[in-house]
Length: 376
Image: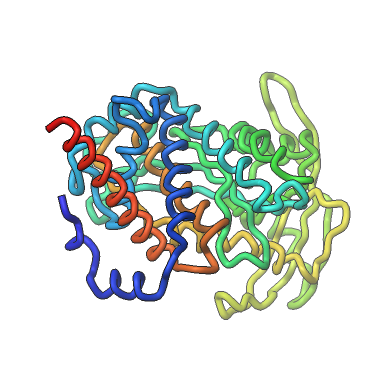
């Protein structure tokens, strides 16, 4: 099936005329994607059965055109069956393995990493079933959301984040447990984790205790609770200060007492929002730079830019099965990861997808033609 009509011809022309990628490198990238799909789904490459070599054509076409697998090819059912035949941990285990393989090119091992955690959602339309689809308002016919917890590498010299690991999260999931789980996977990639950034949705006593136990420095944007309002009240516009905030956690009939440091900033101008705001961050850092703390936290905003980039490779799905949703999400992140590490300076993400998809289709078409000649 030809899919040229799925992409605006002007966009296609622009992407092709402004990017001339080395053909050998593109083929090596396709081989990397083949291996990712094969290892994740326990497929046998270079055999008589279908494998990543065959599935990548439909996956890349869908990502390039932001459409459904069923729209661009005939192997959607086969791909879905392969995904459902393996446990979900295979997906994130193989993904983080691929990140490690890219290590020599990225220099991660010598990096004092600043990591950002966030949630991203995928829309669901239909009747809600199970614990993996989070309820939604129904606005624009969206009845629920599949939600993923994502850990990314961010820094001031990267316009986009580098996606390190994502996992699906169910209704009522334990934030502290799943953040700790992700950190255990990604910490070995780096020399050290210098700082973890979180938005206000992650502020919890249990998470702060868990990060202290892992000796991981954190910076969490704090909601304006009673303690924060009380601490800000005597401050004047432009004032900054730190205060110790003691708290306790009741867990399994045990009371755990701990503390964090509140970094408070009164009516500080936020250039992004063009207004003055009160800021409060919880942190366990030994040294706190109040003058630069907002700039440090801004590194987390790169993760939002990264999600917008990944949206350009969205593979749509109507499936209610979290395994299918998660694999497609991880595949999109793999495409962004490869582009961020190897191609970002040469071509736009969309141009990269078009080149990769076209080359993959040509590769498989030639293989099918050869097989047809041998059997005729």
